[in-house]
Image (cartoon, rainbow, N blue to C red; front, side):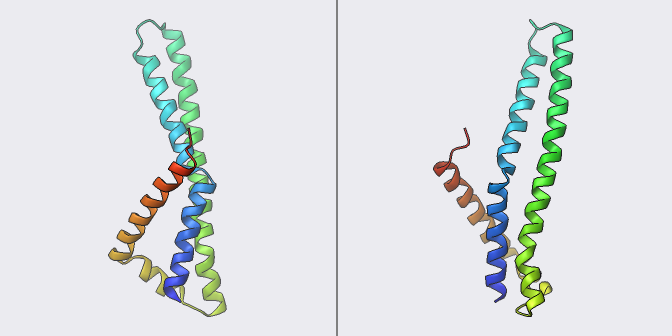
Length: 128
């Protein structure tokens, strides 16, 4: 039951990252930073335009940071729900599930599946 609860938690975590668009928001932040850097390097742009672009980019990047932080926190809390519910029902102890999830082999296998799942979802549903 420990493995089942852990797998459900990991599935919810991966699904939450996808549903809440954490990677998409990170990609948007990267585009904002690249655009701002390009404007700051462009010698044909005057200083006032550079300053406005830098201010706009800094606000957008701060907004992206807060958004990613909030979305990640919600995803993490959602992934803890099956563990807490299984503990409340008496199926498993929370500590046992966390000890299982913190093993190096489980982390490695989960990282491989997360990466493969992300690549598969990107091919099925390209973000841009």
